[in-house]
Image (cartoon, rainbow, N blue to C red):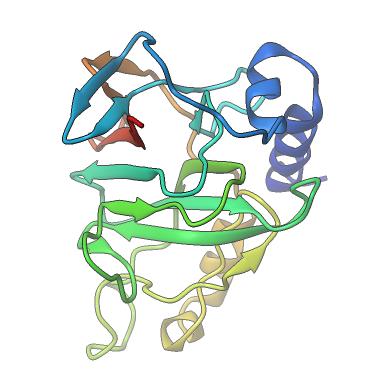
Length: 217
């Protein structure tokens, strides 16, 4: 059993367990953010940095309170390396054995077409969402000067914790790309709070700043 499959099994198992952190994600009843730690108010929104990393799935950052319709999720990657891709996924099946990509960021910003802000995601339906970091082969060595410097197109549906590029660039260095796809995501090294912002630094020098904005009324 390869490393990525083990990661995916651990991920699905952790979401189905009855521990306190898992309950917040499994129970999708409407959630109202009240006066918690790491919460501020601005422009009619409660802004919360209440995110978690569970020891059973150390690659994944997830909201401690389930995201609900019309929340705004702010994800700001800073100084991603050329081989790093930050991924926001959501469950596509009831048991999360399949997932859907919501957004991917690379060192140049959000990949693909994005309406409005590339770092803010309007949550259109209540679901389980999670954020993770993946390393793929650097594109600079490929013999395609017109293709850009990063993968920008990905299969939307896949098992959780998988990022599968598609498009023209996938024709180059297929063995390295296949090996990277099978590899586990980058484990979270540390986290901290800066007020109502959840900060996730990476050992490679990049940082991700995450906030959830929920209508105060």
